[in-house]
Image 1 (cartoon, one colour):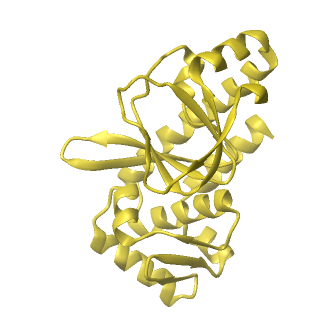
Image 2: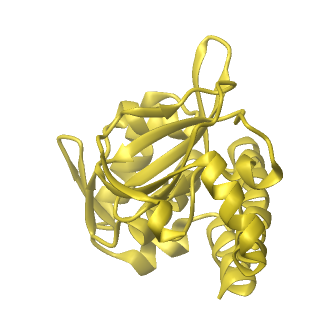
Amino acid sequence: MLACCDEVELSSEHVLHTAGDPLRHVYFPIDALISLVTPLEHSFGLEVALVGDEGMVGVSSLLGVSESPLRHLVQASGRALRIDALSLQRELDRGPAVRRRLNRYLYVKMHQMAQAAACARFHRVEERLARWLLTTHDRAHSDDFCATHVFLAHMLGARRVGITKAATSLQRRSVIHYSRGHIWILDRSALEAGSCGCYVAAKTLYERALG
């Protein structure tokens, strides 16, 4: 399948796919981060999943569906492998082992997206921010990354003032350091303790299903 892929550079804030449009390509991030955002009327939308080098973007193609209901937004610049959606289907038809593996990933991602929706409804902003930071930390493989309060508010479906309050609380306790749109993770253990249970649940499911 690698022979059918091109390595591409993705730029931060670039929209790879608009919800409802034909899905022409599937991406396997190498070191880029891609947010899957469900669109909402009169709103930026809500991030329901974040994909890094552990996954793929364009999972609806595994179901034979040629469009996606989500917006695919590059959160952090980097590289990805890109394959034409039709070429992927041909490769899956020839390689049932690959299809089984990707189907397991699809199962995990469906669960994580459902959990993200419930998390946005029932958990406090600070807990959700901690979960988001942990998830990004896992995929960025770095203790520091860029994220403005406005961007975080969009991703979490929260008011900017709520994000500022939550980030200030974490910084006051020396869990993170935040300055000019840059975040440093200082105490991951404390961040895990302050997160809702959704982070551990999602991570446990991934490890159980995909190893």
